[in-house]
Length: 194
Image (cartoon, rainbow, N blue to C red; front, side, top):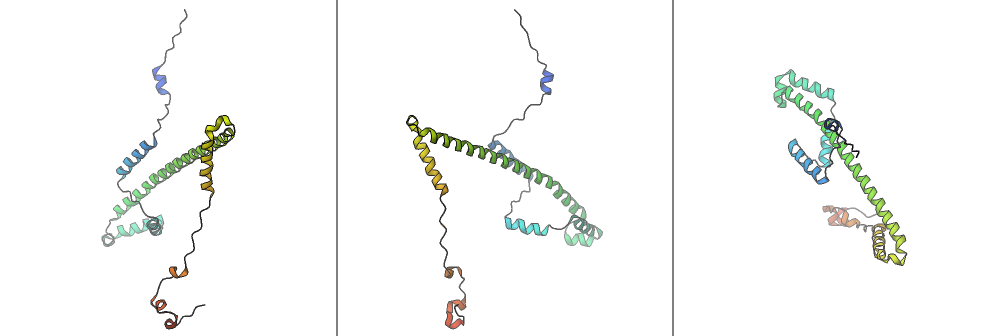
């Protein structure tokens, strides 16, 4: 009897990089919510609020730094602004550091969104192949069980191909605001119809 025993080196096995475990989507959502709770300042804004705030932050960094120097030059300015120059510098530093977080989250969202788009494309491809194969096989009476499924897919596809009816245009009277002059009528308002 020839027996060959293989010995494994536990140190060598530990040196091999192990694949990172992947999380289920629900676990990722839970971790993101827990992380959001730890951040502290999370301020969801409406698009209008975001636009208004962006218009105010168009000040270049050299102007911001020079303005902070104005605050530090005279105590009266710091009192009027309500912030000492050092606190404003810390606020600028913090804003700059959070841009790294913003960029990382944007990159992560783009990656997750792209991966999900690829998943949906694969699903659409598989669904199309299943329909095509099923329609071909349904022609054979031996595969009659597929006929109602293929018919249902055809019915569902016909709904997606239909164009939605254009909404009826509203009359100009319902769109025009009523003013006191318009409510009096054309005889008293002095306007004429064209």
